Image 1 (spheres, one colour):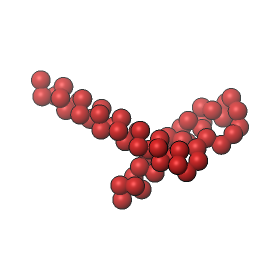
Image 2: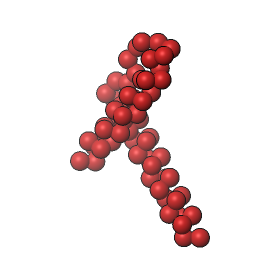
Image 3: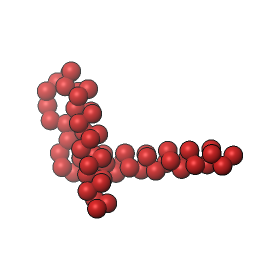
Image 4: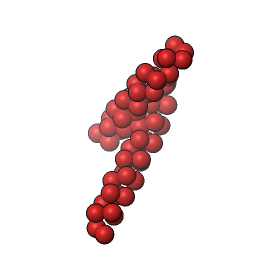
Length: 59
């Protein structure tokens, strides 16, 4: 389940990047491994952001 969440996040990130890049060039954005890596980056960013919000709420 965790791996599918990471892959889903990565595919959505690649899709969003693809929309922006499509304006400039028409090449494929992410391969399978790049999709997983982008998903991990987005997931880690989300965890850090939620931790930051939780720490700010405590103060």
